[in-house]
Image 1 (cartoon, rainbow, N blue to C red):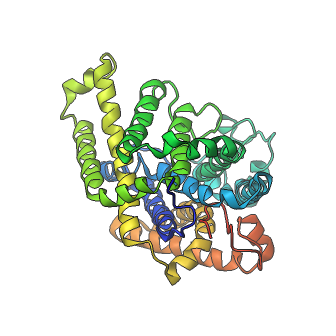
Image 2 (image 1 turned 120 degrees about the vertical axis):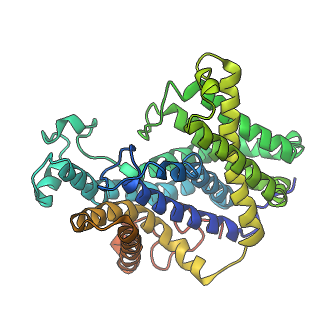
Image 3 (image 1 turned 90 degrees about the vertical axis):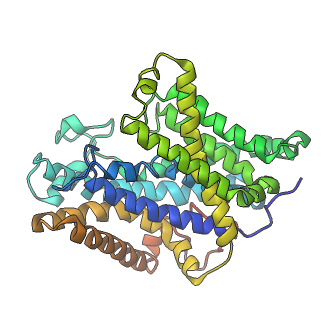
Length: 400
């Protein structure tokens, strides 16, 4: 069986970096988009921005799970299961716990301030935020009070999926080494991935809408864990990867076509078809396949174009490989805080948006420069210790 397990894949590093950049832009967009709830909203919002946000909304997190699984698959053969599980736990759970108690707190504080639910005073708020028995903002409580992971939800999901794959690796490896697996064509692989989303769409989407709560989030689990499992198998069959690169234009065309259908449907161009969605299984499955074509089409196009253009090292990439996890942890809090500080100036979004973007990126860069120089911060943000082997740098690491 042919595979990519002994190859360094710089394109995976680039995809991870690009996906984070898209995520930052998306979260800034949430500040300006009309009718979509978020932690804080601009006084000037735009309905048309929804169409832009929908471009990446269905697939951007699936892409992160997919490439995270590719990275895990590339390193599994080099570690004992218990060692790799320990590494993943340190790289994911410690930043999650630290982030929930510290990094996320300003988001909750600013959100409550913007809704005039609390009086100013962050330290007073924080003492209640970390108290699971607090009586503050009881309508907003989870089982652990006000503590929440907000945008850090990706970390517990990634840890859970990684743990499952690490534990089941012997079984999954037997599947990957089976003759029938090596005979699966690229076309069959694409059909399988598309069908996996259609099944989750049909059976789970309405009953279990996305919550990012981990427990009971069955539609998200079906979508994201499905992408994760497929990401595990993906580098173990070189034909699949080469075909995605070869057919990248086709996948982009399919993705754009399905995206245009989604936009037209959102604007009522297929009203009679939409009315049949809940009563006609054929129509529901049709929508499922169009959604799946959008979901996997963009993902496969990104993988294909990255494999064609970006599978090469770069000094920028070396910096971003270590910076990406701190950037991810910090970015949404910085967006919320800077948006709150800029709000009183009543800047038009044409001026405010670039200020918010530059401030967020600068804050992430400064934060990373501090984190990487202080040993305790490196540990809390999921970075390897100074002098530690580069084999696995952090949660989203590639193979070398």
